[in-house]
Length: 66
Image (cartoon, rainbow, N blue to C red; front, top):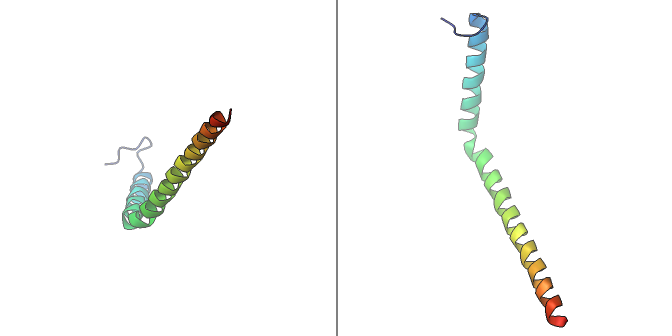
C-alpha cells in the first residue's frame, strides 16, 4: 500500500526508484565526488591561510617602518 498523498502507486514507485537510483549513483561515484571536493577545500584553505599570512606580514612590516 502506498502512503503518498494521492494514493497512486505509480507516483510512489517513481519516487522510490528515483531515490534508489540517486543513492546508487552517489554510492557508486563517492570517490569521484569526494576526492575533488576535498582537494578543492584543501587548496582553498591553504590559499586563505597564505593570504592571511601575507596580510599580517605586511602589517608588521608597515608598523616596523613607522
